[in-house]
Image (cartoon, rainbow, N blue to C red; front, side, top):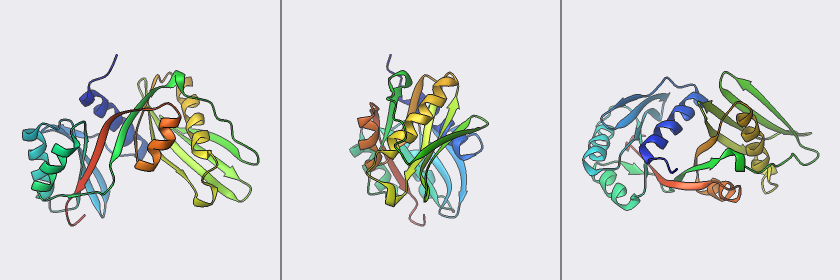
Length: 217
């Protein structure tokens, strides 16, 4: 069964917000409104619809905000979305991202290669995996479990340890921990570089994600 995109967006945002410790989003006017609280990203609005009337209203609202606001739009009509947000006066980020999913039972296992060691801890509903090298932390990432969903976030490898498959090791450890808690579906938003890693692990792209922001942001 293929989930409807608005439902998938809701589920991703719930886990992403939990991973980052944000307050629950306010659902209003066709979007999820999140208080981020950063100097260059005071609020973020995640669009649940890319219909012109709904998206145009959200884009105008973000453009009129007095503090830096981001508008995140998962869509399968990226060119149409770009035109709407530009017309509102928002600045689009150069690179497109991707909303991706995977049935966790299909996630491949990737053990840590020597001399790396892998440790996963849990705080509340959020797992954190840290991959260490004798010289220090090499890679890390988090995954929040919400119901039967596991939302991966902030998967990163230190520059000097890249090109060694360590991102796959982190994702494998997180997926195994999430499955042990009853999670069935993995969800994430990937950068352009991350899409290559996740596609190789069996993740499927479900939508393009465009991110725009107020010029001040």
